[in-house]
Length: 493
Ligand code: ZN
Ligand code: CU
Image (cartoon, rainbow, N blue to C red; front, top):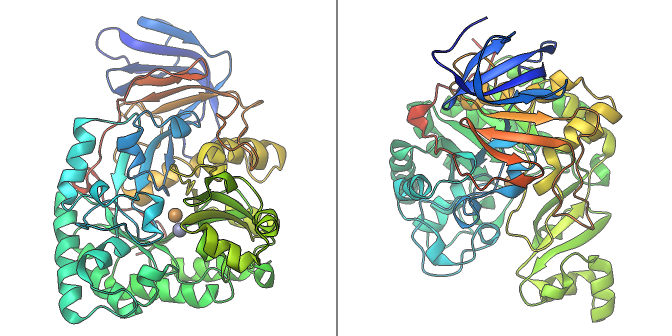
């Protein structure tokens, strides 16, 4: 047992300590002082300003949401209740090619960039200014920020339906390097989406080459997650190999009826690739995806819900089929009438979702869309759903393994220092939850619901969630690339 100097701020007693490594839990106490874990074990003789008897409830590291679109939410709604109420203490922004910085524009950004911000004034020309804004008015969670490829393209190109020229690639690469200097942790792409779908693989490789010198990583919403998912995986691996950077496949899925069951094939390809290069992936625990409504083309969805519509706000939360029938339009024409709009697409096989969730190298990421009127329930439910629905009820994995996929695994991939495991000296990012009752409450009908069973959440030593409400505290920190270790991918020389 280790003793901190002087009294602790909080001692949690009789906790079921789940340390994040995947190893077996044990009963014990944990003390925190200032922003760190001061001691762990049997702390019977330690005094603290506040003592909390957990009576066997779980105490584990705070969850890391590796796939978010919280870029602007961190500034606009810094309490981040949708995330802290799930036990999330750190978020990674700038995914799917879309980031709030660096971009100087004067018109409404093209879809899907409007998912994070509709107003041109909301973007930041300078990446350091964006991070500085987070420092000045900190959110409740820690944040890491990536640069989006679509944001670079919109800033550097007069039209997006073509490959970038050599000069444009130089401009984008300069902007990317400046952002990395300022603290960006990597580059994301969304090659599926119109602002980047005309970009050839070589364009991405040229940009990704900038990452290697900065120990940064590349994440991707791949060009195709349905009929050509294996070709897209090969493209992703090639980008990683040629640019010599780690790659993370975002929200891995096999979308569309044609592709049900193909996660056997895709996970085998990922497993083989892992033997020769650093590859990671994240997944969310639902059979429906969500993005801009125009993506319905090629989505092979069995059912579509409207998440928001600018001209028809009353359509939010309703079935596209019903809205189209009422409008007397085909679904294709109804989509045109509803744009700009967001949708929720039921397009995945339950068995694929389970297989990907169970794969030991899958991290958990919500992909939540915080500005949607009627958001996909993943925004409020992802982490408790993995613990409750897929862990406790479906038995996909042990509690310890579920926690590992949300904590130490994610911390290693993103190079987070002193986060993601419970140990003396680590930052006190913590969650207390009841393993018997933890579950998501957010549903497709009623998506903005705090989860059940999350009893207390602590960020950098300060409680942000307790007694089923936000404490109002905003102790989150902006973590710059310079604050991180190199991304860690085991199994690669
Ligand atoms: Zn995406
Ligand atoms: Cu995303």
